Length: 179
Ligand code: S3P
Image 1: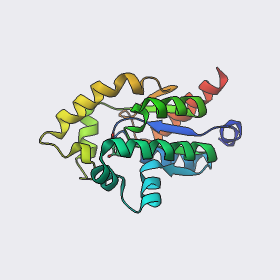
Image 2: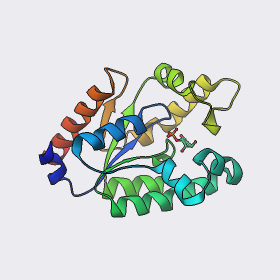
Image 3: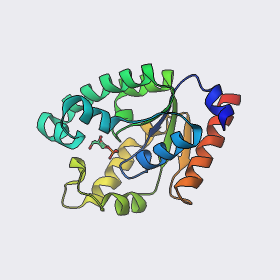
Image 4: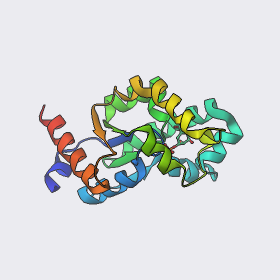
């Protein structure tokens, strides 16, 4: 594995819907590669003193996305490591372009059933505070699919456990670097 971390000259960035496992898988992937891990939602909290959810609710989605774009730009500049982004970051065309040109992007793709079950465990997502969170996820999955599909790599994150997903990401990144 040391080999892959030595070959990397840019960060690995995980994208995908809420509940896809970006933070959990990202942390494990980083540990496995011996690289630093950054979660963009946590970085927003460090920078602003408010949780990503609070920033989202206080300032609205547009300002949140602007701040998120600036933050992601800063993160990819300084890190050869693993970055987990908030689910909407890659939907912003400018953030997407930036990430695809300066990082290796990995779409963690999971079925809505799985996303719904995982996100129901915690009430921390403003976008899912709706009458029918599963239907909201269904809609977001449809709306965002084409954007996520622009990531360099797609890995299904419903199959197997998190460690299995980590191994499949490593294999896919190695293949991407070879191609
Ligand atoms: C969002 C996802 C959240 C957070 C914010 C908006 C989205 O991050 O950034 O609530 O638009 O999908 P997670 O994907 O880590 O839950």
